[in-house]
Image 1 (cartoon, rainbow, N blue to C red):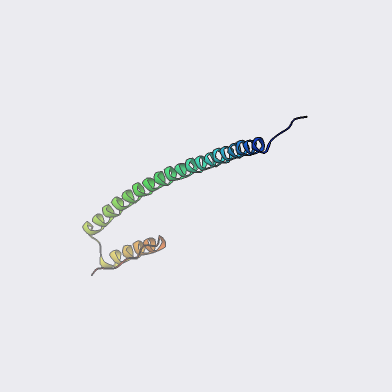
Image 2 (image 1 turned 30 degrees about the vertical axis):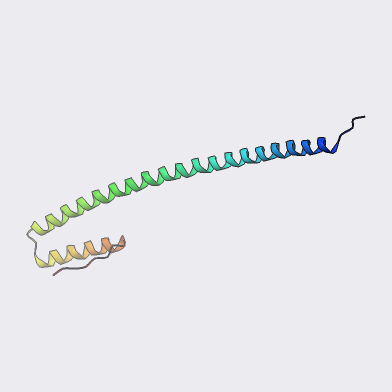
Length: 103
């Protein structure tokens, strides 16, 4: 039969401990890398969405400015202007935009 000394058992313990430590570190590294890639994809999606919203807002603002310019240049009666103002106000409030009327 085999005879093992305490020194042999200690070396075996060291070898098994190093192997287990390496395995745990490698597994943890894979999990962290997967999480990092997932967050990178989320960040890219949020960046793309932010750019799309910014572009949409710029287009909406340009359209709004054009409408305001046309409204100011149009020869409308006061009743027509008041009616258009109320329609604009309703639409803006529906979208959660606070407005302040200037006199």
